[in-house]
Length: 277
View 1 (tube, rainbow, N blue to C red):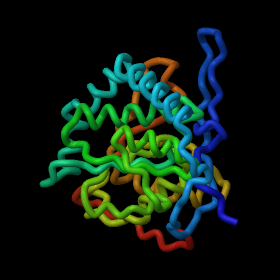
View 2: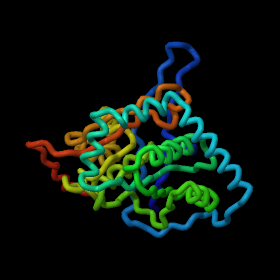
View 3: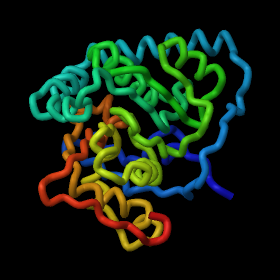
């Protein structure tokens, strides 16, 4: 039976070992997590079908707090400065090409009602749309979303998808895929669906560091299978790491990067013809 696509741990985040209270404590990077791949896109209906007005009001308040926390933080200032820097803004310009906006697609956001990290991740996506006129409509999907959460997302200007695309969306137009802390299989699915230069060049991807995957690939066949295309894409990817700045944003954004894909003079996409690739 295929597993549902969700975050790596019950709280919507990768498993992380936080530092001790001592000054010299160090965080351990999480190893790539793997889940069984679902092969087909399927219509989706939330298990929680009723909108609860009290829960809705509480969640609206939580989102307001999260957005204010992000917007007034040193982390957000650093985040915006990176996006506005010449090297990163040029990458977005190349993805846009002749278009004026990037559609944003968010996969695997997790439960925004239950956990702060998904709220912070959603907050920064919404703030990006408010800050930059080149960020277009936001579409969101996660199979854990309740009807109440979906209603709040819609009130924030997002569209909740009715089909579980398994991250297999073809980039037929410039698209910003916002996928913080998703499973490796979802990144692999996205790359597989767009494994040609004309599509990859239309993608800006915010998600787990591909460099980290390359560094942490093991001899475990499942991990190798899930990360093979990610590692192959490293050869044509420009990666810009996110600085979390302070501990309060570490859980939501650690080991996250912007990724852009472009072809050099001698670039070729590897022919991944093995089973499952």
